[in-house]
Image 1 (cartoon, rainbow, N blue to C red):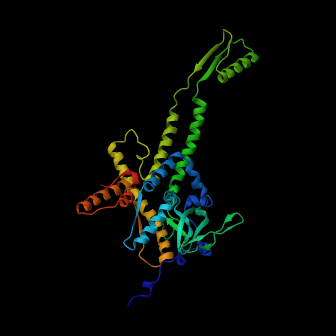
Image 2 (cartoon, one colour):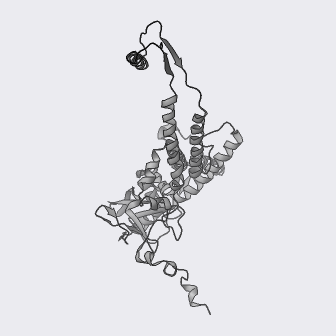
Image 3 (tube, rainbow, N blue to C red):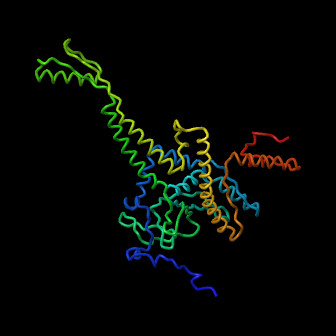
Length: 383
């Protein structure tokens, strides 16, 4: 006979929470950097000003944003066409970019804007909303956060209405539904690099420019020395001046300080750390002298594998939108699925398949070629 515990949870939060945690009705984000900065998402958004970090983020996003998509469905053709038309009208690139923010901020929330189209309810957009507007309760369910007197509250919040929000989470766990933030791994590399660049700039301003050495007779009075120094300052500013014949001027070049190389190496080191955090590789953003063609190819392949993982994340969120659409309009039916794939592979796979079908006697319409290969009416003729 099966034990009663077989059908219930044994390891629960109530058994392990301390008194302070039991008083909360929500789960605080466990990110330590986040906690130290008063749960302020701006500490991560401010990192995006770093050019190298932004380049790596864009590179990772583009792995998915450049993909083509098609709707896979074996049911009623009318439903498939409706879904295809919906995605043709949606700003799919912007939506995918917002979904991909989950990889960097841990989770992303998009609110669906619905419209009436005859007898149907159709989405006209998915708008990304700030992460700080939401919080997770102790059932790991997303809720709208309370905001009072200029502060976000650690209370249960407002329950979200059905069919209205799409939640995307990057590697969530039972203890951390807020997901894994890649920007958390980039926080210290960006901050330390910023400090290094500031000191590097100060060193360049102080020692990078040539400086003047003036020589004067030992009979000069204090007033003459001051006048001579003023002439040198004017010369630095205006690049021209005149002196008495017995005065000496020497232009001294700055020596090559090895400490400058230390700052440059520091910046390169942190850039590599950022690349590894975002892309898991470095050669895709910076080819060092020691890099080889083979190493670059390996890194390119690893980045493509990363794109496959991100593709699944995006597909899951877009398919949630399709689920909502079908539930609102058709009830419990088999749902179409959106599939992302590299544009080149779609064309190659389609061409190989279509050639085989033509050899078997199948004849395709012009509309099919226009839709399948993204062609216009004037691009080709069928003989």
